[in-house]
Image (cartoon, rainbow, N blue to C red; front, side, top):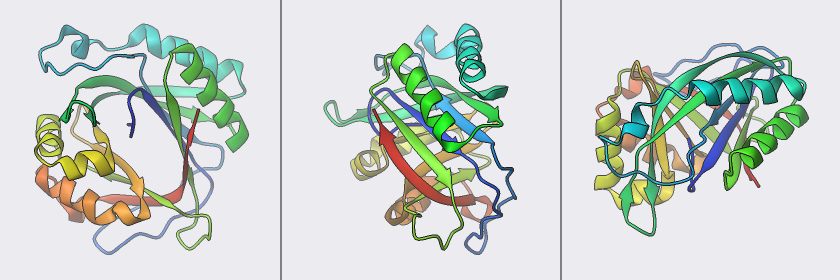
Length: 217
């Protein structure tokens, strides 16, 4: 998941059950749990038939697990993702393979350190961190939305068809079983709803979590 080319997204979990809007759901999360959305790609692909988009990133997964383990975290496996991200220069959306890494027993400082090392080793431009917080916390400035039942190609086409969505949201990712993952600022909620519907998703099935995000170089 990224807002700019070659971004690694990080999700840090703390122990709160986060309230959500009507028609959405959430679950209590454990202290010390984190997610890192990462890729080793450094170039854009605009061909949906590019063989690179069929890679399962197995070696990359082992490499990131080693970084996690060497820097205080406990790797808990990873999930393969299809991502699509907007190019402001070319005015179109690309295709990208990435993985969501599940990490246990880390604090926020350790996750930032892990993310920095992943970004540096794999030549990523910046890192997006998202730390879960109570919805009413004064530090909340962002949301993380997940919606099941979304087709990846429809997500790509929805972003490419609407430059506003591309410029404001940057892109999004979908798991191989069709779960959309979208991060945005609090003010982006209407655009995220618009994107979900344009991609054929059911907003009533969305899960929204609140927190603080930052791009880390």
